[in-house]
Length: 174
Image (cartoon, rainbow, N blue to C red; front, side):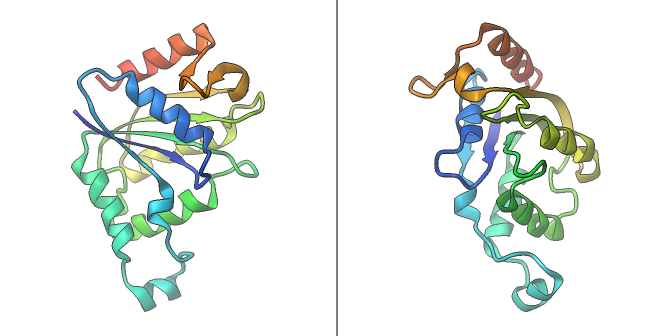
């Protein structure tokens, strides 16, 4: 199984990228590619920009990556209660290439934050919209208080209850 995973953040120290990397490592017999949204930096989407530029190659490449995989794992960062600008912009460009961005792939949505909310607001938004973009949501999980529940040196969840929930979440893809 070929899996594409990414943290929906452009932070170089993204806790969501750390979480999604760990989550993907729990999949047995999977070929995982962890993407960095910084590799898909695009001008701010607008109809005017689209008319001027057409469909940028980086957006085409991103859509092609999704098309070539068997499953997706995305961990959402929450900025002011919603998606990060980096993710939303890439998603907007991608949806102009293929409105069914997720291309009927099985998806697992995760989210985390340093606080007790665990980015639950943005996760709920993602869960509520996934069907509109042809995603086959298998499971979702919010991980609160990232730094109290995750060992950044060993890249793993330290909270046994959350770890068990994440293992069950990832098993939904197999």
